[in-house]
Structure formats: C-alpha cells, structure tokens
Length: 277
Image 1: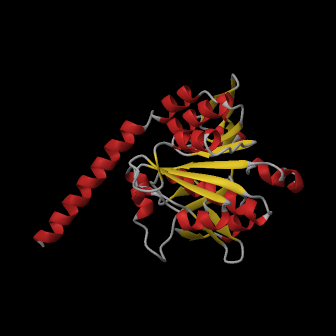
Image 2: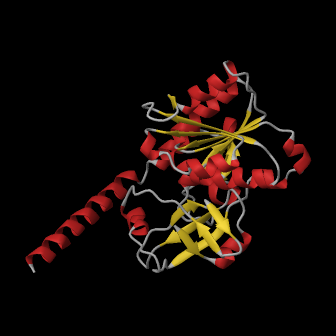
Image 3: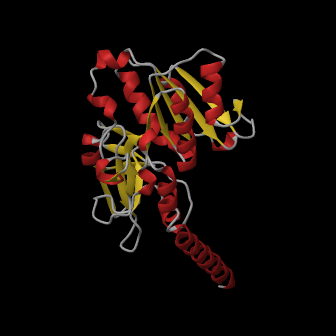
C-alpha cells in the first residue's frame, strides 16, 4: 500500500519503521518502511495477513483512512552515516527472507543511489511468495533467488545459497545484512560467523508499542538488554540471543490466532445473514 503521509515521507530513512493502528480498537502494528516518495508525500508498506489486526490493514480500500500512521521510528540503517567513498569499497550482501524483502529494498535502493553496488539474496518457500523481484533487480548488482521447493532460482535455503556463493563462486563479503523470519536470521548469523563476516539483523518483528515504554521488545545483545524500537531495530547478529528473541516473539501468537479465528467466524456469520435477507 502507498499511504499518503507527507510528514513521515519527508524524514523517512532506510531501516526505519512506522506504527499503524487502523481504528480506535485496533492493535498497534510495527511495519518497516518499504519505500518512500518525498515528492508525492507517500510511504509504502507491505503487509501479510497472519491475524485479525493485519487482516484489518489488508481490508482497507483505496481512498480510505488509517486512524494512526506514526513514524518514522527507530534508528536508520548505519550505512547512511558512513563515508560514501569508504562504503563504495565494501562488498555488501543483503539477505531477505519472505516479507523481509520489503525492508531490504529501500536500503539497497539507497545504496544504488549513492553508487554502492550490493548483492542480494531473496529467499521464499515457493515462487509465488517471492516479492519485489523486479524492483530489487533494478537496484542490486547481482540478484539471487532461493526457494525451498526450487520453483524459482536456487533450490534450498538462503544459507545454502550464501555458502555456494562463497565456496563455489569465489564471492567474499565485508558485511551481510539479513532481514526476515527470526529463525532465518539466526542461521544466517551462524553461517556468517563461520566465515568471520560482520552481520547485521533487523528485529522489528518484536515490537509492540514502538516507543520503549511497554518493554515487549526487550532483546539481549552481547549480554546487555536493549529495546528494539528505540535502540534498533538493527543489531550485531553475532551478539543477539536469538533463542530468547524467538521465545518472546511467540508470547502473543496463540492470542492473535484466537482473535483471527473469531474474526473469520464473524465474517462467515455476516455472509450467512446477508444470504438470508
């Protein structure tokens, strides 16, 4: 979705996120900024239905309104603070898993605008779940697709593709940025540690409040506690306690699943009533 939000678009940077609240009773949903257009005053978000709250976002039609669209929040990608000439000398690889492709895109796009070439691996379970392929191909130096079932590109996991690039194609990287499912980022971190490659991950999926007040996004990095929403969302992957993060991420899953089931039953009941009348 392209959301008309001029003030957010005016100051958004790659790596930041927004909090979306559809209506008065809606849940606060953190979504990484996928793209922004300062001239048009719009911000692009990508949402996948996993529960009742994300369903509400996806039900919005063109021309309708979201009650709250707050941002940009979080710290931008550290790349924007680096010396551009030094950045150009680095070999950078982005690894995007599933919807993680959305927040990877603005970073690769920004790098391209600065004259920095980057390789990108997009991973998905199957071809139909690969998103932003054309957009990413336009800004990446080399784009590699990896699908679990082999329906597109390389057959296998992104970590397997990473190993193939290094071991078989002679690639070497100075830094890897991985954004996607927590389990994917964990194993990317394990893999890059074997090659001693500095790695950054984004933990935005942990957030609830987005302001550092609720404490739901606590994460242990290097034995210290940080709040993802104000101290991140990007952290040193080799220092993150992923097992703790995954436990925290699953705390509200059952509640959200129950809400989604109740919403589905309500919708089906509403359809039946329409048919009776």
